[in-house]
Image 1 (cartoon, rainbow, N blue to C red):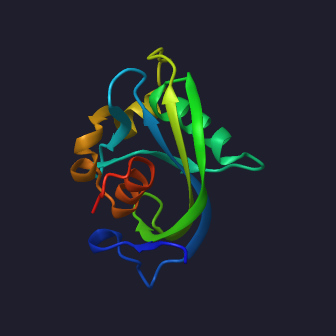
Image 2 (cartoon, rainbow, N blue to C red):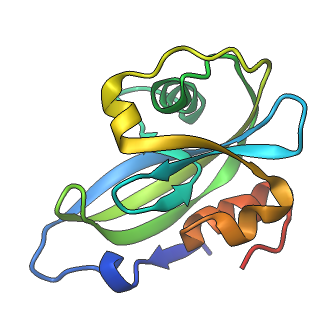
Length: 160
């Protein structure tokens, strides 16, 4: 059975808004030397989560993960460890787009080979800050249940 999440509170599905479908990648990226993972903190909503974004055209989840990590954080030396074989679904109201979303989530686990970082564009800087969070703190720092699930799938952290 495929795992499925539903938004609550401000992210609860709104019956008056259209439902949109999207294939996305969630990239759980490890620090090259420390037991930390790469996260982003959305400034407008104060959400802390892994790098996440839409899979475009014929991209594989791994290709989308590399692109999204570069765009959102500036890190370019991402080594893919694995693409988890199972997907899960998340259903929520996406306030930033004013639509409901039903997303199919693909999990990509990677590790940076170095901390070499390109300059992020001003739009990305205005959207989110880049954070490194200790692995043992991830279950309490990640905002969404879906991203805590990703953490548990990759690290086996018993994230709740």
